[in-house]
Image (cartoon, rainbow, N blue to C red; front, side, top):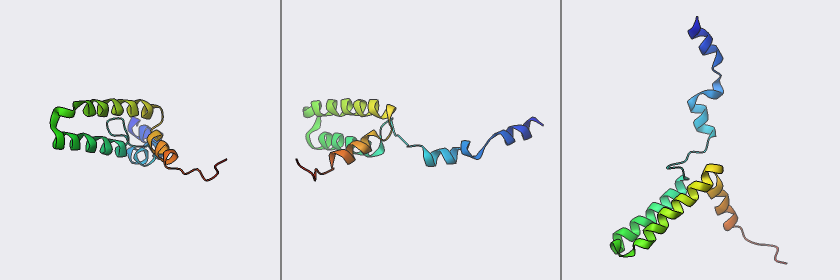
Length: 93
């Protein structure tokens, strides 16, 4: 009896597949695009220059945590920031 009542109380909006279609997915608590940029820069520095340029790697870690901080409040912050940054000013006054 309890099993039937539990199944009736679950709505289709609480199913995991529905949540995956509506929620913004973050990897390591940052957007996927930023994570790829950050790892690409870090990999390029490591493969080309070695550990001589370690401050760039420290800056990558700091940038990761900064974007993570902003992404916890709004998961689409980085996408909105990119759209704003690339927007051209058509009406210069």
